[in-house]
Length: 351
Image 1 (tube, rainbow, N blue to C red):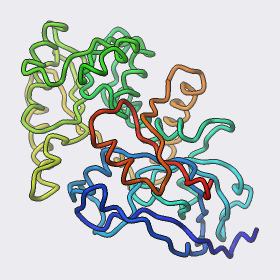
Image 2 (image 1 turned 180 degrees about the vertical axis):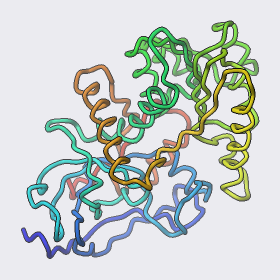
Image 3 (image 1 turned 90 degrees about the vertical axis):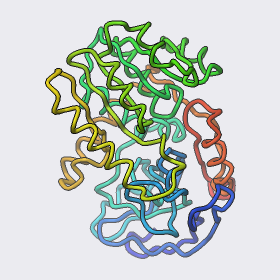
Image 4 (image 1 turned 135 degrees about the horizontal axis):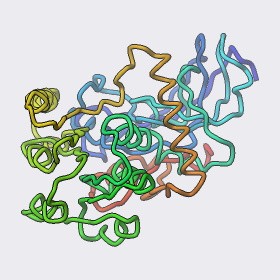
């Protein structure tokens, strides 16, 4: 196979505008030859994250203009390399964080953005802990720095990030209170989590009953007015880690406004002399220094994949869908009925 001339027919899922999941389009086109330092990655697994659910509504903070190919992260095999890229990469499996573009049978990726995946790992399992695992690891150990013996609250403990976060926390000797629908409570208990019904009108009061002295950290992807309740759950010295604005996902208007409001509120709380702190977790923080950003991703994903290989982390695969059925995958992910991550894999004729 040449390492500087490559053409291939690629299947992609296009998000044409603000549409329902059924409005996703399955398209084909010729993939250009990889450019300087690029590789062609054949998709082995990708997933549906909350980002895509926001993007189809035009609500993701910095999404590109329509139309575009969604897909926040990918696990795949290098099939060709461009000039300046190492030919020994061909045939090896890697992960990459793309933000968009991963819902495709093949895609072009900068070789410097490849994250090593150990041989023999199920690509779908890796996909469940790629962005989700890095996010959970960084929020727990880099942002909140919760120590063994601490207590945390995880909102949406059955979700993709939440289910990984609670497993990492329990492994670290941290007590976890997790919110979810009652149908997920038994699964949470098996993970060592104390579950609370997220639909309980007095959900925060229930959490205070369980942890009357306050908690060391709250991980909140909901945002909106109720984020103030998360702040009140903290003990002195505790940390609020906000990482989303799910409460406003269906609201019309400027997609940046809810996030900017949240930034303002967190800033006000940080100025208070009560020993508590509030942070907005941004996966892409530090991207302006690509080398250190990628080094941090490699380090943290390596930690997460080691725990996956050792059986400490159980991949929470809610369902697998072939690429051509991405609309059904997105519909299921938005149904709020699943635990874990909905994974997209190649169609049978592309595997």
